[in-house]
Image: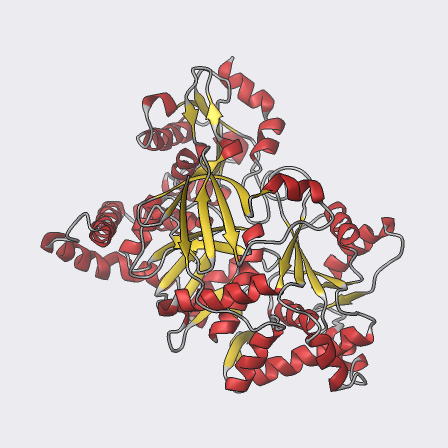
Length: 603
């Protein structure tokens, strides 16, 4: 049994809570810009003083509406500044904030409202209000619903109603919560089963924020540091990063639409980004396809190979197993920096010094590519139950292929069966109203993650897959599907890949076509636009997909290689019920829904 730990660097004072982070930031400099809001295409700064004023007045409105310390309030909205204000206002009023993904169905919303015991709901607009109203039909009594935007915004009205609440009553509510009290109930999106309400305490959020700031000063303490949040704030990782940025004084902007992301990156110019692997996959595939369409494919491929080689050489140097990039490689890298890399960096705004990849595993090839072009990728690891980050790579101490070192105040242990166990400042005290889950998921003070991993001699954690995802073929070969699926998704035509083969004579794969990638593929070959259904039987498409499979097979042993594949007629999405809101595959659901397709592969 192997362990790695990092010593705690900072502690919050006894009796404090998350709100003290904003109070301390305001005391230090009331005019410090903590957020930026895009209005009429222009980013406008929000100072600590302005933020505190908005939060306090809204918290008074909640108190006037009958919210008392310990009460639950729910929020259903896309990522936006108002989400943050409601979150902080809830904490100032002593409430427990319950996020709901804005894509949730009425059935899912009903479960969360019912299980959490929420007393009030904030929604983004009328469309979300309609979903909530449908969900409340089966509740014992309807809940007040306040709209944050749209035709009938309610925040101003709620603030007006709270004007009579004295400052002393607000302060009493704000200081009523301690580090041990619940700050949020985060319902795990889950790849199987009904979501469980994970208790995240004030201490989980706040102490993780202070210690992460000290652990990553090159990112978070740089003068002028700013970030753009485009992940859903219903995800614990996005909210944890928001509290981290608040503690560090990093200016945060929001973008709710992936369609607006590229433009927002160029106008906001963040210095670091929190990114999920799918963003890297899409940027890489799109850039590669565009280069090939423009007749510059050979240049791009050579530049990509050089970037990966450059990053690998630097990585070997940092590990003490190499001397770093040589003179010839440095020269090639400098040439391609002008021809290719600078244009790719401009896609991210041109000022990004680091990206932190989380939520799911990142293909090491992509990490080397983006690091090699000058957008260093620091991969991290965590779960809802660890308040997101439990381990992360550090600038100057980055080991690509690993998820880094334990965060301060965190211990990571590898059990005898290879499972990753974690305890520390970010670990939840348990699940809401679910003692069975608590007994099942905690052992000897450690949380059982369900992930498989190893720890090297220097304490770096590497994740190899999920315990439940491991396939065992009829021949007894253990196969981790993750690396194969990551490699397949790099291809322009592939949106999702699911490797199968449990109890079967060989490994196979289900592939889903990417409509945007397919359209670009057709255009580059002067083909009439193929539908996804047509493309799944097109010989040229199948030949290209076979090439993607052949490339992926080079990463594994012969016994682990994909022998056959089939193209599904539909996309795997959150709406179809096959992806979580954080873009993780619901493998069990996919296998259940496409049993017939799988059986045909082996018939």
